[in-house]
Length: 450
Image 1 (cartoon, rainbow, N blue to C red):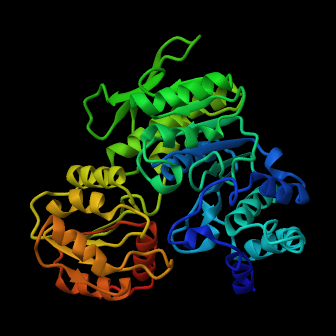
Image 2 (image 1 turned 90 degrees about the vertical axis):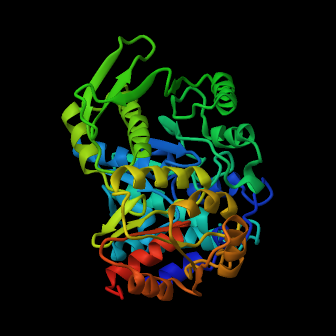
């Protein structure tokens, strides 16, 4: 039954599996998405929605927000993509993936609408991402969530999630990623991400670079959407207590006195997760202004208990094993900063296992990664056809550092070799793609450790 439901979705056009994802009004048609949802009763218009776009930080910010709102007693739906191990992870309520039985039932509910559109024409047929977006809305309505947190898949302006009527919009960051589709400048990418801005709806932004934030400000001004900016309206700083594991949140919103929430702690590793936490806290402030009750105690509890699998996730000790889905240079830099801060520098060996999608920029990632690892292995993930060939990655690596590299055709063999040659004092880092992180996570869960 589950296999049939999964096959129904994956048999659709799935741009996630294309070597180069198309982008433009000819292929990504919001009218098609609106029609599909209309056939399902327009669930996207019936749930208070928080819409999140950004080059990095979407997933973590969504997870942190979920944790805070859940600690306040609310039911929170969270739609994200791609998944680590199972498709049901894309549709979560209070941090738990959609149960298999419910997943099968929800696919059955959206199937007639999809098939009705299939019969009209190929152009009218919903894509995989459109169908899964509709599935998320339908699931959240049936489960009567209080909030739906909807993450953009790619870009924003033409994304299937951009048919909702949110009461809050977030733009986490702007970086060079998906440049073939979104543009090769930060300003062009900012314009696509800010395509989710809606008239009169508040926007929380973590973007600080002059060019991109100017684009976002212009779009918000045009849409009369209040903009709350990090570095202007809110920020964070080291805890006034001097505790390195804590931070303070500072706010000075328009028409409101400045204030500070002191001595906050977050469960997620890395300074970049504190940055994401700052966005989540500023969002909570706006949620409160909309009349929702989110006590400071719940805020603290949510930060302290947030979980984000595959985001600098420490999954093993002796040796330390770190899984991270970083797939661009800025995410890799955040990973390296976190490793430096949280793990001992003096180790017998730091070992890297790397794979990435063919449409990414492995040279930029490897340029910053290679100097930090004594042993480097390359592989190709098997859960998506978009993976770069390991031999191609080796050629790129040798152009940066001419040394020995290990090459494996699949993650199972790569992981077995990595464990065979590591000691209990080593650090093993798996990164380059969420697909690789997910496959290694499955191997660890299934006990294939040597």
